[in-house]
Image (cartoon, rainbow, N blue to C red; front, top):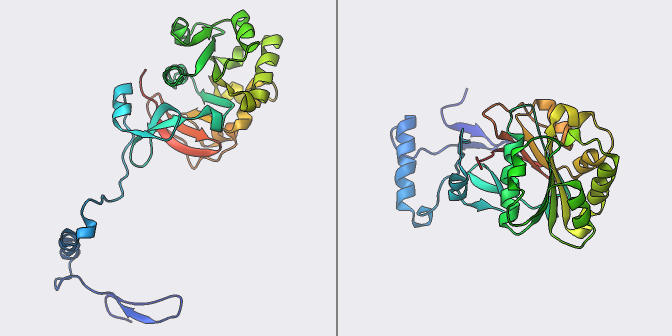
Length: 266
């Protein structure tokens, strides 16, 4: 046996003795000694220890901005070890961005939040809502160019950029002409600074093996709301575990990189 504080270095098997910071050997005494040492060192002043914040159950848009912004792009959701407003840069992680989740997980709310953030940064929008959606309430907002298929066809015939087409309930799109138009937009979006942002139920989106929604998923970017562990397959990522919580809780995926977040209320 060896005494307390004695150890062997694995690399060269050298015996070492761990130093004590105070005569008293209790954990509390050693911790106090560390605090006293840190207070005496000028280089340590002003440095903060590594912090891991808890995600809030509910966060407003104003609260989200107060956390500060991490990255360039449209401020979208709060997350990170030290909470920051995480951004989505569609030019970098697009041209497809998929918001998925089960019913009542906050898909439409997330779509509205992202729409407002894109407008704030100067991106023009086209909106499509196959059924009633609060996204359509933005139809008259400055920067929204169309909210129907004829208007979308007209806008895409021009050269306006940056431009994003937002579709709620994307799994309900059954029009072949519209599907072809959106698929072409996804395929050319990276070089034309145009994007497709869609929201739909995880189960129904996962069943699609062709069409614009399937093509958009190849960007490996989006938001997985309240996902089960296997739902990461939708965007080609692995999730360590299922995510539980309030509506708006999920995993933000940007070009295959994941981060757990909470979407603010619009």
